[in-house]
Amino acid sequence: MPEQIPVREGTFRDGSLLANKCRACGQTFFPKADLCLSCSHDVLDEVVLGRQGVLYSWTIAHMPASRFMPPYAMGYVDLPEGVRVFAPLIMEENRPFRTGMDMGLVIEPLWIEGDREVVGYKFRSLGEGGAS
Ligand SMILES: [Zn+2]
Image 1 (spheres, rainbow, N blue to C red):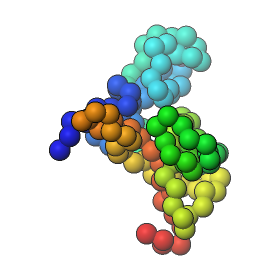
Image 2 (tube, rainbow, N blue to C red):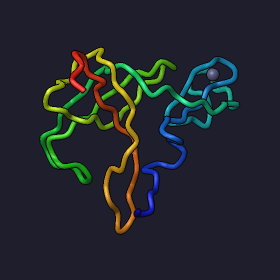
Image 3 (cartoon, helix red, strand yellow):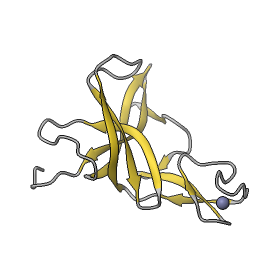
Image 4 (spheres, protein in one colour):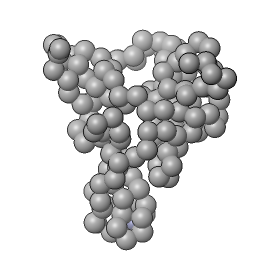
């Protein structure tokens, strides 16, 4: 099995995203902030985010990008902790994206770099109508 490295240090662990939360006002940040962007307090505690959220918006790109082959989808998912996460979305033919649909976190390899897999986070539709 190839060595796996995270796409960005400290963004996830054991299948969940990691955020931090301001000890003064309770605002939660993903990716983690060094300083509360809401009240400037500098003591923030690490929190593990829920793995399910709701799709806020998305876009489907048809132009090649450095790491992704078109078409691919990117979107914003609102998590219960009040965090809006921007991430690639997994496209599935029978599950078109809709605002407000339930999305689940997926941690998986994004691309290969030399002999290592770069692992990152994506979301996929949890679907309606039992399409699983
Ligand atoms: Zn704060």
